[in-house]
Length: 78
Image (cartoon, rainbow, N blue to C red):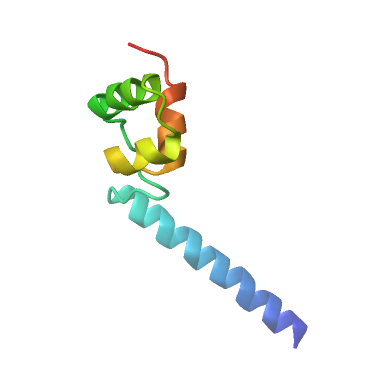
């Protein structure tokens, strides 16, 4: 029985890999989408931080999470 189970697992893995290859060849992208930062939001976050607001409050104002605000504040100015 275990030999059949192993055979089925191997076949399942092969079918999955083949399906992913076909999807990738057809232009399907996998994983989390890349998000380009909104430069206006970055500037506004920096401005609000300069006024002494906390990152959580800045996030509420600009409509972003606290983690996003921290990421915006850590970005180098361009």
